[in-house]
Length: 99
Ligand code: HEC
Image (tube, rainbow, N blue to C red; front, side):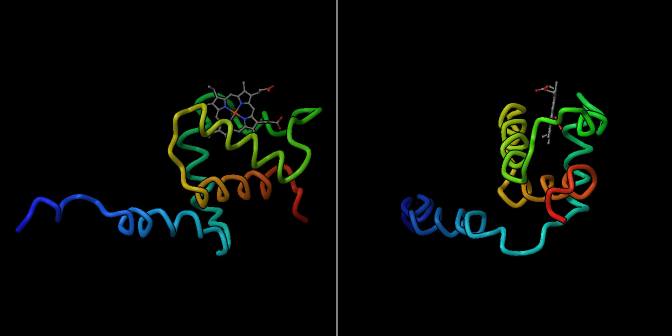
């Protein structure tokens, strides 16, 4: 048995990272979005912040951007899928960009 066995290979790293990169094709999980939002975002604002006039995000792309900024800002390591879940949860519960 050689030490080399324990060195992660590029293929191994890609195999772990690819599902996260390729993900997003499946439907958003609104329940997971709600749980993530309630656990990590409600520390600062209640959902009232999403009913402000004028609201900050004006499109699905804006909302995705704002959510991503907050996720990074908080040092959270959410996958793209998890970010999508929260984006869709907030859209469904407040913004309604996607009819
Ligand atoms: C450190 C406190 C804090 C945390 C944690 C936080 N937010 Fe915020 N959030 C704010 C503040 C303050 C504003 C209003 C900022 C402004 O006016 O630009 C805001 C605004 C927003 C808006 C825009 C609201 C609108 O319609 O105008 C979104 C979307 C948002 N936050 C999402 C999130 C998400 C998702 C998380 C969790 C990943 C999160 N926030 C975590 C403080 C926070």
